[in-house]
Length: 205
Picture 1 (cartoon, rainbow, N blue to C red):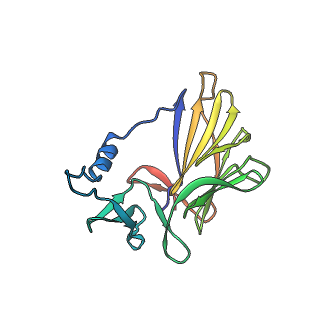
Picture 2 (cartoon, rainbow, N blue to C red):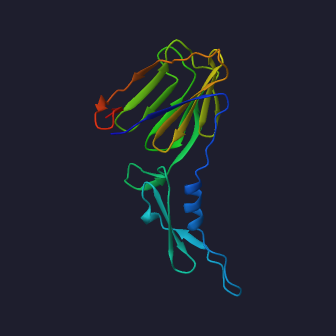
Picture 3 (cartoon, rainbow, N blue to C red):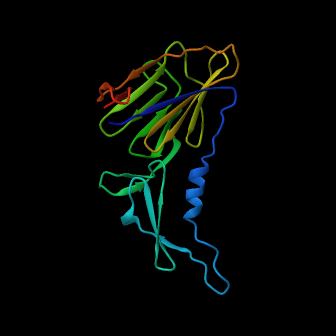
């Protein structure tokens, strides 16, 4: 099954956490400084035939290979079955409607209107639409992969970030005057909502 939505509610400024372990792992993959008189090892080219959903492999100038494994997906299979780079940048496809540039799970954002939800996440065979009940998500601003709806409720902003395989939602509460609960209407054509009893979570399958 695919999980399309994760949530995080923060009060005040959103804290960004640096993953020290990921950084250390990334540094381990870098070539060491060349000894005096030795040529530095450089990347010759990417070996596109070795792409995977999470991995990118490069041929190095010393005839060795380097594979970079990412936490999230970095490639998706196109209609021909070839791996293509994911680009989660939200681009305007029509007046006020933005979609991810290239991804197997596409995200569409726009100002909420009658019959048009603010946010839709879709794959080739299914779609999930989110609608914040009792509020209007409008005044959309887009920057890179992020879409923000300011002032959806008292002292409350909502933002969505397109990821390689779905969407991350953040509700920012600016003060104690903000609501303490939020309700979404979830439409999920082509998917079934079911409980994973082992994990204790609900998912769309």
